[in-house]
Image 1 (cartoon, helix red, strand yellow):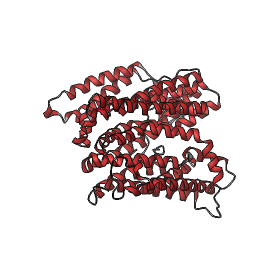
Image 2 (cartoon, one colour):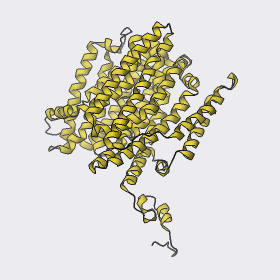
Image 3 (tube, helix red, strand yellow):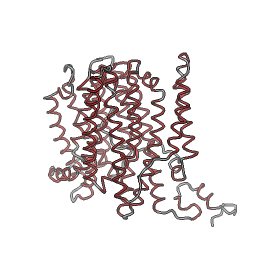
Image 4 (cartoon, rainbow, N blue to C red):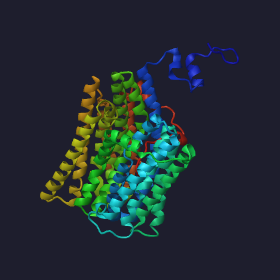
Length: 536
């Protein structure tokens, strides 16, 4: 028993309060079970990474406002189509090394600095190849508009994105996550926002392209400087890329799953670029960018969820894996539901902030936000499926992406045949995405549940009650007279969030859920998963 300096007894719960760094198992001297420790680890990691998400969110919004107000939907649309192709090329240029580099470093019999620079050499070759193809055939990036100004040379930046990803992956192996926060949550988004505003005085036509290039270069510098400090420059190094290419081939299912998930969230933009004028694409792109903010909540758990799952699988504790997937999926679904309601109920006001020309994307915004909520169970289930059924997960993702593409074209042509206006037709890919990710979640959750012999369904009825209550409150604000329209955002958003969260806290959250709401870390302690670009 511990005593204070004056000799008084200090009970165990006060020992915990006075010593906050003590593990939870110290409370009352009751040891935690392994599953409780796993949930506590997930909660701590989730808090840390959500802080990084908040940093990225705060830096991302200015770019949407600047791009919408200063450049307009036509230029935003051309930019959106080009960037989606460049991002895909950059993703492919890493050859899966974002996931596979840690494995190469852990098994290397050479100095780590040489292995890391081998990976950089592989990314360089792949990036130069991708850049050459797109520079030669720029119509891939601009399928429905003329190629002018600096358009053709945008692919030159692929190497910056690929090298940034690989260097951050190498730093993550040495547990340096602050570099990722600086590069992805601070440097990238703030650079593109400031540069978009600055370049608008130089060239409205090329301003967005130049700002994107500036943000990628800034992120590359923010990644390479700590990489060189940590690993150093190679001395006496001769590239041995064959083992890394072999690793990339072995890692193809994981890299393929990443590419397919990325494709499911971006193929709609490319379809619109082929089928509609840039203005329509620009309106949809802004709705997509607003809706993609909740998506980052899932990736906030990626750095900690994978290690916890693999640890449970190593113990052959499949019930623990099911519990972890179910718990994290509920956390993400609950948070995304709140953001979806806040974005869709006053949807016209939200899109109007970006610019009055973008209000036409309100319907697409609602479908895209709903898609994020429906996708949460499948996205978290995939975090376990890539370890227990890698090829089956890849086949499911490929089949559902094919379904999404086919259904998108079907809806567009059906609405076009019915004589609906282009703005209505442009919502077709959003509906297809919502349907596809919803079905994918059902399929992957069921497959994982069978493999683990335990349910991974995160749905709880209070989620539905909370959503209905928030809709009632939000509808009251949207029904206000036009002269009080400003209250939709100023008063409606906090009211929607407060209503939704109160119902959840009162009727849905248990002790494990409340573990997520500990003290938030400082900004420099936050972490983020690696992202390919600030505007994806």
